[in-house]
Image (cartoon, rainbow, N blue to C red):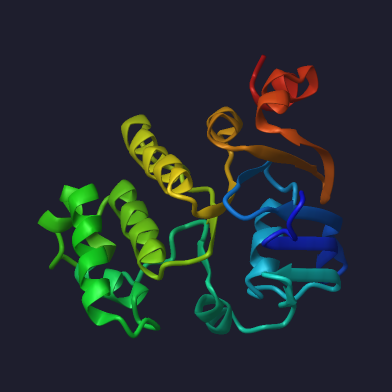
Length: 239
């Protein structure tokens, strides 16, 4: 990369009690890139994402965002700086309406008219959410909840969007809709780090990829190269 990466992890370590879930991970995401992080369950992908957002405290290594160290910076301050995450399990406000959830995405913004415009755009993109805008978010289907979580994050207008397992538990049709949105956001220049069990779909959408196994990065290359690598095809693509 010619420019400094937007996100840089250097020898990141995350542990839970005596178990080390992430063991010295180096990872970079350049401005405008869509980078996929793939691996089996328990590889350390979600722990890595949580450490970036300070939802778990790293036990070693460094994290830089926009050239500044962010290890230990509270999650709400990271959002203010432009780092948003859609967590595994979506993390929506179940007892709030769809509309209230989306408005929470713009909570830190001062341009209230633009927030209103962004919500309207999300309703255009996901007409189902507009139909259910006054419904409690917790009563929606899994796919609809994922739409809410994605839309809420985008409305915060992040510089970097972290997506943790956006397709988990969704129907094939809904997975297609979510990934259409991911590719569209990427084409508009949004920087994205994507953790995804569906390795093929992730790599087909990404510019570059990292493979994690047992808490370490075992491979990194262009997404196209990883798609054709025999080890990746055997381990993660079912071939």
